[in-house]
Image 1: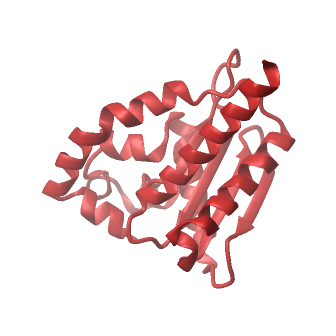
Image 2: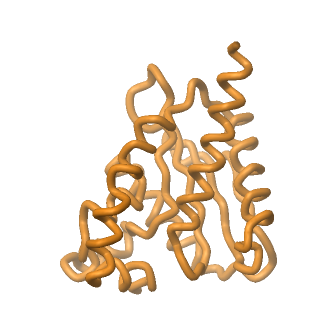
Length: 182
């Protein structure tokens, strides 16, 4: 199943978009490392993501939000933004989560690094992994590797909106953590 985003990213548009946004996306990964993370943090992030989804023009789209601990795939937060979220969202979200866990990078970053991946890979590989934006590795200062994965997925006109929601929520959480330590 090729998403609209994958089709768009395999075009000439993709190269131009990647050139304009790569440095910003790479800097997000280094600057959005949390100072701590636990189930309360996951809950706060999830609630912030849901609030942001409703406060934006995105509230017309059904969006699913998931935060999962990487150790055993323990769910820490899950919510559908509204009724009407199709059951196949879970399959796509699982493949996005697998991608983030395997490479330890956001799916938007990986989609830029691997343009046209969906044409090169086998169907079995495509069922397990998905570079559609909306997957993010939660990292914590002083902890090696990824501790959790955030996935925001929905049928949007611009799937990068899912990535932007995650960035906004992480910036909000980092600000809270810094204020609490000051």
